[in-house]
Length: 169
Length: 191
Image (cartoon, rainbow over all chains, first blue to last red; front, side, top):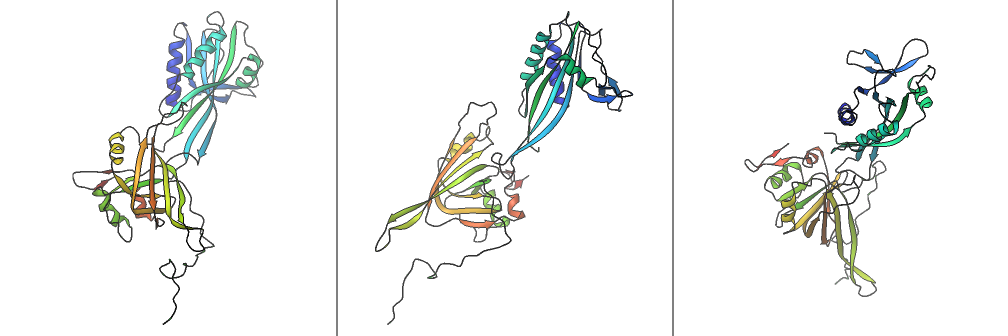
């Protein structure tokens, strides 16, 4: 999983290279910051959480979320005694950017291209859907806080899927 | 003098049917397939110790992980007397896929040059036809889908007067159907 996200981020890094300040982050989890407010945060190996906010000083911020992993065992496929086992990771890539630096549709297009081009022997990624309703994305990402996205910024969520073939090896 | 009625059965009567209320059914899929070189004498009782030297000497070649099916159709000849027909035997066709693709071109080219005794493994049984002469072909179809796999499609056809021998697969036999290499230097199986 980490390897796949790192590969996606390498591609995102190249795509958004022209932006002076692009922050491409890894996997976030939801952490509560007192009261009812919850924020996305990158949690390091020591368990320290670094919350992610909409930062006016950054041209573009991107981070990933894992929503669900599902398993599929197809008994009609596979070889030998085993069914064909595949895992699907339902993911999302949240993009927040400064409109003056990059057009939201352009940002989404570059992210789609990065996600659609990742394919290896045992996994592939593919975009599934894009949510453009910033208020809705805000409520899901920054729970318990009022919608306060500056008008000069955009916030979109691109849902994608990682398809992984489980070989047991 | 006495009249003795003749039948085609060795014992003169059909063997008794055996039922077992506890056993489940045998689960399908050709999980492994193996080829027996012509002239090879298979042991009366098939065990791992009996089969291992045949594998080491190349007289039995196992493809351990496959998927596929067997079609078994009755071959019927003319009937005589009151018979509408007479069973001559069975025509078998195996359609099997081997995912070990890249390194087996020479193997399948060689396999097509001979006719083989044949056997296959289902869930817990080996089905063995040591004395048949199966015609084997291997094709390399490629489909359009990005997710589809390029594998060897093996077709084997053979005729057999009788049905295949059934041998239960114990732990020792099962290990012979794992992935290993038969080395040339000391003729031993290496995991």
